[in-house]
Length: 304
Image 1 (cartoon, rainbow, N blue to C red):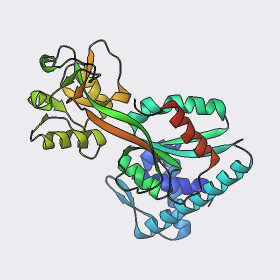
Image 2: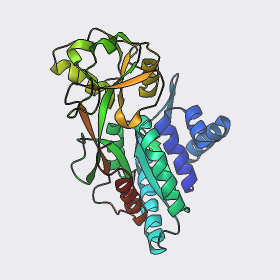
Image 3: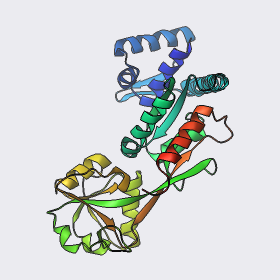
Image 4: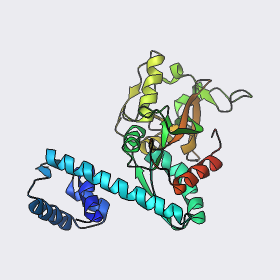
């Protein structure tokens, strides 16, 4: 078995589906299914249970995939050390970020990084902050952009910048009757949570940063939001808010200029959110990862 085939098995495990794994690997489903059948036959062990909803690893499969991850991790470390010796003439960084936040913050950084180091490839994993922390802890990512404070990581997390959670609405929404103007001390127009609680909100799932933050703020204020469609993604919720369907939360760093949109601070103090860069604990940090981190700090120095 070569390293490419280890990646095949890991993709099947991560996706929980041969069809989704094949799609992520840019290969035919039939080819990936045939590979798995042949390898299980050669090994003499079933690695995955087949179910109506996809596949999941057997006990033997879990052990095999865990070792496969470690093999690829050690291989990547060896590559990084060799590339470092060659003074950043090549390399690869496994980077993680939340999809919504990464859409706005990551592309400018990657553009400049590619201009400086055209032969270093940055592979991006998109998922929420807490799963990203798990990937960092397991050494599967070289670095990640996460929300702070970290839930599971206790060290090797650098503060990067302060973001803010804002209310997204349309300019003709009735919430505008409750807006307080910006002032010398408050740079954004703002609303009191108690005034806007009666309106309908599109809240993200409780496991996401925005979904959890919204529910925490309502709970602290002793209020119950009128929420619906909580499975919507953050970009979808913000787009619905801009059209006046309901209110939604978004990040200040992810504001989309729109002639019909308004973005409001929630409360006079707002809801700040710190962002940081996380690295694996005790792992070798490549020169490429160090340079990418420096670029983040130079392009986003502090608050948004």
